[in-house]
Image (tube, rainbow, N blue to C red; front, side):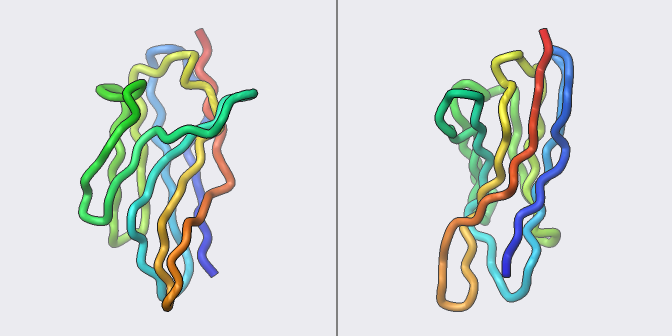
Amino acid sequence: QVQLVESGGGLVQAGGSLRLSCTVSGRLFRANAMGWYRQAPGKQRELVAGITAIGTANYADFVKGRFTISRDNAKNTVYLQMNSLKPEDTADYYCNADITRWATRRDYWGQGTQVTVSS
């Protein structure tokens, strides 16, 4: 069984920073690409940032220059450093991981962590 556990959400004022973490737990797996998505009330879930197993990152235009994704493969953890937060960044943030376990490869999702940015 593979699980993704997120942490680091909370309430912050506009212009502030938060750091999200997501750790993959389980046995006998390999984490391929990982990423962060977000979903605001009444909106569809959207990609925020992704990172490959070797560390190549990509970002949605609306976070470029403000957010940084990174990963520690030894800890099976992906991070999202969020700076210069805006009220429109308010959403539930979800971790996603493309996991290979035995002969199966599939996506796993975390439970979500809430980020609220006040103006």
